[in-house]
Image 1 (cartoon, helix red, strand yellow):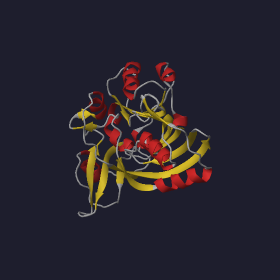
Image 2 (image 1 turned 90 degrees about the horizontal axis):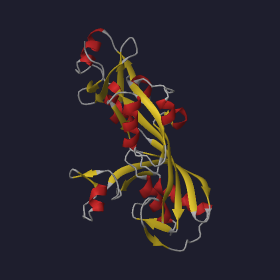
Image 3 (image 1 turned 180 degrees about the horizontal axis):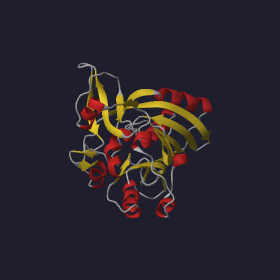
Image 4 (image 1 turned 60 degrees about the horizontal axis):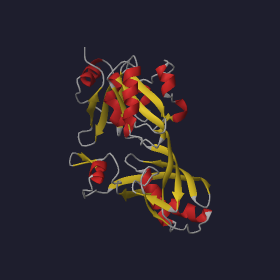
Length: 286
């Protein structure tokens, strides 16, 4: 039971709720997820099982694609529909061209401050814990990248759009910022994650399917779709199994496999040494 499972998360469940259920369904404690989805969000939750737990952080670092809906004229404490309403005001009119101009302004790299109601850890404590205890805490900005934005639908009091963004992007904050640039206030009313890297919601399974045994695991090799594949044998295979340097240079992230196309290790190019440095050994050296 080693591999990656694509789950279609239901609204109202936390990512940990899903993991807890899967541990029971799959009869193993070795289950984790790649990238948290808030309870109000639905869509793709990538779950790693068994030895595939070793690649969780590499999948989590891939770009993500969402469908989000902004509710205008109201803002909440959590920047989504689960928080307390803290302000309401009359909606100022805007056009499609206004929205597209605002979207264009977000494309590229920028700094974003994570919301206080989030699971981000600061000094060993979750931000939402500080918020619940009314304790002030410094929240540092983080660099994010918005790669694509597409307007799907809009009305007088809502905007629905598609966004492709980097790891660490809070779509709740993005929704609020979009509203502000349109001279309004707003919060995220709905969120669906449709893709992480090259793993798609359309290929996922719901919890009922999985509980009844109707699911399929993806191999580690197929899950790491954005990696350069390097097949090794003999001495280089021995080195990879032991996490040693490989005497060649390739830029970027590399998945090392053997003749049987099994994942052996993850490497990255070291430009200074002109060698490949092991980041994570995936297969035991027996």
